[in-house]
Length: 126
Image 1 (cartoon, rainbow, N blue to C red):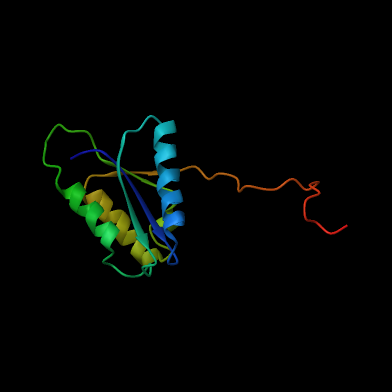
Image 2: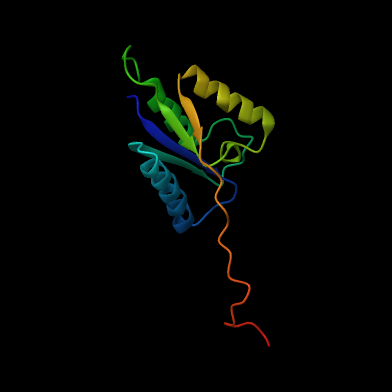
């Protein structure tokens, strides 16, 4: 089952709309890069030091299904390393798990935050 998979860990319990936006960002990045995204796994509101996360475990399970000797290397796309974990020890363990599964990691380039024009007149007091 070699393929392209997305993963993001969200620090706080996010709304379904926020989870959907992260899935969409990963999918858009993959489309722009010409990558055929198979699945996106999200862990929502789980502490970053917990070793067993539902989305992460499911991703590792999928990566472990690849037993074809000449298949392409699986790729895991993450928005940033902070979307794996903010805890250095956990981050190191997770990267080692990806290496052990034979998966490459792709980190999405950082985009500029949306900014409003400074000269807008809208609801700003005079």
